[in-house]
Image 1 (tube, one colour):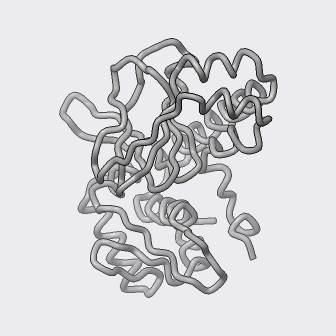
Image 2 (cartoon, rainbow, N blue to C red; image 1 turned 90 degrees about the vertical axis):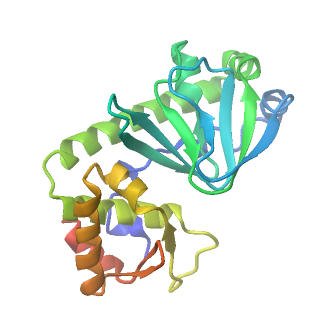
Image 3 (cartoon, rainbow, N blue to C red; image 1 turned 90 degrees about the horizontal axis):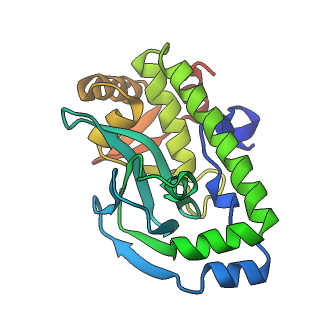
Length: 234
């Protein structure tokens, strides 16, 4: 049984991995003609809020967080992107500085496509245009959904929802019955949930005591996805 049969995962997850999938060969060749590949260590900055974009980033392996920092220096994670996803393209489309920052959550291999190549392919490819428009529309719906629901949900439910979403992102070569380890610091999880660290720790401790999750150091393993969905109020 797919998670989509019991939980509207698409309401919480962007779909940028579909933008470049199966593009016409000539478009992909032009897009990647000057591509460079870099490996970022954990916590290393990929791009920083306020800087001018010089290209787009394609996550080959690993995971990255998109986040903003407030005046007090507190970080708020907006989104977690994993392999196959594009980040950094919004600023180029808007012809503005980056509205947020991105950093590696673990060792992450990233392809960089120069701005000029991206814009040239965008100008000539109707397929890329349609996909970007569809993706941007979907991302707006996800953000509205997150803001609306998270504003009215208790921390325990918000933690449960994010664990369900993260479980999907951390699946690698998944087979039914396999456990999925969510390797994220408690600070990052609290930032993603939008709650104080101590409140998130309390919710995790309750879920662990109830046998819904288990922990291996900082890793979180969902033991009972159906009960977790019930906690998430879905």
